[in-house]
Image (cartoon, rainbow, N blue to C red):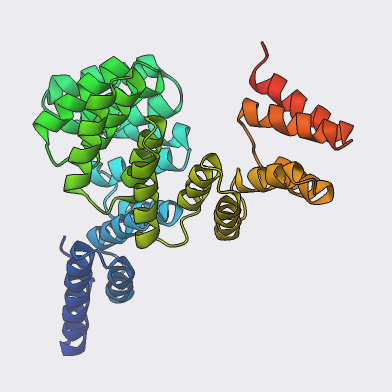
Length: 359
């Protein structure tokens, strides 16, 4: 974009503009290297010199997106649009961030604006699949998929997004088919074998699930999310040794990972190593003070050891959190009854009845 200042630049102005270009280029290189904080700093310096460059605001927004600072990215996309209101790429990214932040009406408003400007802009339909899926409007999500297909029938992201929609609906067979299509069209699509593994896991096809977990980890051996879910998968298959190895691997990458600590506690508890389990639960609770689970387990251990006051304090603290597993709430209700805490017991059972009206 050519910036017209409206007046003739002197040598100092030219020097400043050159510096801004250098900073913008430096920001791009840092972004490509994954150094987001440094990239953001360099882009801010460029924009201080030339705040009227729509592409730089756009690049700053992309950097903020990579840092998951979506609200700030939205403001940058808006600034970029002040200088280039009809840019469908900027509008598309803005709509995506509106979806990410749960502002679905605004997202749909922007997607409709894109459609008026360029009805053949395929990402405007492809990304709307996500918006409608998150709104629970699965029929319109599927309609967006077919509209996108008319423009580009080989879009891997479309198959990925509609696969996610089918997965949420519990249609795991269709989800797997869509994700496999994505894998064919774009073998290096992020986490695609992981998603296929989740689909097969839910279909009960454990060998195929395991195969795809392994394929994903070969491509991305340090992906904590995949390692953790693979650990849960192995645990569900009764492979406690393999599961423990995965959870310990996560702790090598991130020593403060509370879920990994918690499930190592679960493995130790099931093996009868109560003291080891207690230590893991305490560590998990320290790493994430709002995590559901550790207080319940510690309260259960205290209850079994006859430490009634300690058990009650821990269980009462657990109820302050968003406990949503009916079987856990039932156990808590029984313990609260035995501890003489009728009000707390009633609270537990009422929450069960809300989650499972037929219980």
